[in-house]
Each structure stands twice: as structure tokens, then as C-alpha cells.
Image 1 (cartoon, one colour):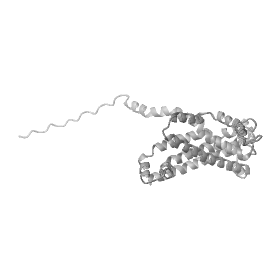
Image 2 (tube, rainbow, N blue to C red):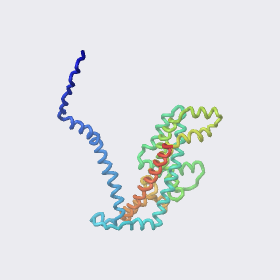
Image 3 (cartoon, rainbow, N blue to C red):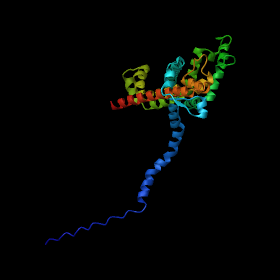
Image 4 (cartoon, helix red, strand yellow):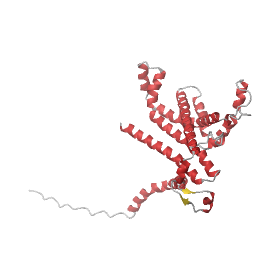
Length: 316
């Protein structure tokens, strides 16, 4: 005797709890509200000034237009005018020389310090802390310290050279073109080398020790281990460090202005100094905006090239 299956009775739909939709919307909206102050701050202090500077480069903006308004649209005339000036191209050349030299010296010092502090020796932590002081010092302090050290009349470097009988009389390091650019490059590298050291130290810690053991078994010398193991393994970190250092040095203004103010004879007049002079010495805010736009485009182009290279290496 078969027993008939009991009819299936579906449960009635549960009524939506009041406020459930609002709670879900609140959970979705909460992260945006937390991020809103940061977005507003970045937009007001970074994005808006950049866009305004780029837009200003297409107008005829002098001191009168800044005060009274009514700037006229000139299109690309400001760019054509600047690109036809030898002083603009000279400042760009000085910026490239300064940035490339600073990047090379900063990276070399940072890598040397990272390799040194990788070893275990007494006082390593104290030495690391002392090195980081150069990075945390305000630029105003470090630049004025270097200006005092290199002063031709009472600078410490000249006093030391006289004591060692390598120098007679005064040598004005910041008053000669070659020594002035070398001085600002070294001051910049001294300030930013600890940052490079931190990045490269992190990269060194990520290299497997088994690679060095295998290299030693194969009879590789310390130099060969550095060349064929350390440098290739550090390549991703090195590229990131070089890019960040270049962006920092290419837009550096304070160190150069405090030490040399762009002199002597324009030897250290980089594009940031050029833009400052155009804006606040000649009251040409439009041509200054052209220089600052170029200062923005070059790092962006390098960043795009870096990320494309990184993407290709990741996909390979």
C-alpha cells in the first residue's frame, strides 16, 4: 500500500526588515565618507593648482591680470615664445644635468650604505639612525649648513684644506660655475641618499640567500656575486628608486635657491628656479606656468614608461 506524498507547502516570503536597505547603503557609503576629507584635501591642494597652472599657461597673465582679472586667451603663444628662448632651453639642460648627476650620486651612496648596513657589526643601528638624520632634517637647515660649510671666507671646508696645506687663500665654491653645480648636486645626494638606502635595503632583504650560496659553490668572487646576483635581483627596486629620486631632484627648488639662487651666471638656474624668476621677478605668471607644466609632463612621461616596462616584465 503506497502512501501518497504530502503536498509541499512553500513557506511564505519573509517580509523585508525595515531599514535593511538603508543599512546596506550605509555600509557602501561609509568608505566613501571616510575617504572624502582626503579626496577634498588632495583636490584642493594638488589637483586644482595643477589644473589651474596648466590653464594659466594658455592665457596672457601678468601682474595686472592677477590683480584685476580679464586675462586674454593666447593659445599656444606662450609655449612658442618659451620654446624660442635660449634661456628656457638652457634651464632645461641644467635641470637634466642636475637631476641625472644627483640621481647617479644618490643611488651610488644609497646602495653603498645599504650594502654596508646589511652586514652585522656593532653600532649598526646607531649608524642607521645617524644616517637617517640627513633625510629628516628640513631642507632649509641642510641647505644653510652646506652653504656655511662651503663659504669661501669662513667655511669649514676651506679651513680644513688650509690646515692640511692643500689651499692658500679663499676658494668660493658657490661662486664658480663648475663647483656650484657640483655643490648643489652633492648636497641633494646627501639629503636623499638615506631614502635610497631604505628602498635598496628592503630589496636586499628580499634576495634569497640560496642564490649567494650557489654562487659561492660555483666559485664566484664577491664582485661576481654582486654583479650577477645582487644587481639583477635589485632591478625592480632599483628602477623604482631611480624614478622616485629623479622626480624629486627634477623639481627641486629649495636646496638650489637657498644655496645659490640659480647663480653664479645661471649655472644652477634649473627649470623650477626659472619658473620662480619668471613669476616673482618679472611678474610673468603665464610663462612661469609653461615651465611648471613642462616640469609636470617630464616625470609623468617617465612614470608611464616605467609602468609599461614593469607590466611587460610581469607578463613575460
